[in-house]
Length: 401
Ligand code: PLP
Image (cartoon, rainbow, N blue to C red):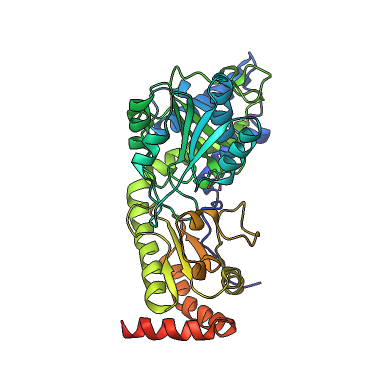
């Protein structure tokens, strides 16, 4: 194992902030009461849950605490919204989504297709952007739901979900809008009360809270059928004794993320841009798999032509650098990313694409070290490529430009 650890896989998960751990600790073996109890010992925990709900309400820009439901993860939030709408409107069999969603959304739609729903998958252009006329044309009287992500987990590209919700409601006010905001949380400001979005899901472990806790925003008055039935927790919309320590931890993480948004993320963006610029300048077969524009500040996705991304990840690992080739759920599979394929990334770079994602814990020294070793690593791997002629041609084109 390398003696360094440089963690550049923060879109997969993040380190739990020490202040979050500190906030959670009393709720394991001191204040361990079930918050549903009638006695003061339980009420004390109940009040803390309210504080956490208030913090998440502020973080997501909701109007009211009652619009926030705690869930078990981002995947559950997505399922709760999608299946919740579909089950509340059984006569409407049409759904619209995009080709670049996370598997927790795409596989839910595959399941609904088996149950007789028709799903329209919107494409994206080479920069990962949606075509609004295509979206508008796809909305039908029987469209139950339009669902899209706020920010893509592989490329960081931001979808203008506010505008999408406007278009949807103008064409069909009955159609509901779900936003998978898992990769936006903590990276861009969320203000759902000032949008026409009906549902939005987040996941604690993407913004320095623990794994296994999430939240769903539901605009007041929006009907949906619960996914988990049982007790009366979460106003009978998500049964199960509350994960008190994790909810309190996520509340703390939400407060910290609000504080960190401007200052820290300007710093993170600078580091991301430095890393990206260095790699693109110093590695002749590197190409950026998106535009530099509308992205969350911590993510870059770079394709290395004629070589295997998995090999880059292995060599990076030898230097203690953690990165990945796509979503945490699909890395480990050798299939090229569905996101990059939808964007039309050329075949020559599709297998050699990797994602680097930073956080507020990433330091300048870590980025400098990564910038230093990256060209050396790719140079070594280039020598192993069966495409020597193509690499030589590419090198000569790049050096003459
Ligand atoms: N949505 C997006 C965009 C994600 O990146 C992820 C996780 O990587 C999820 C949903 C699922 O979140 P969770 O792992 O909490 O289920």
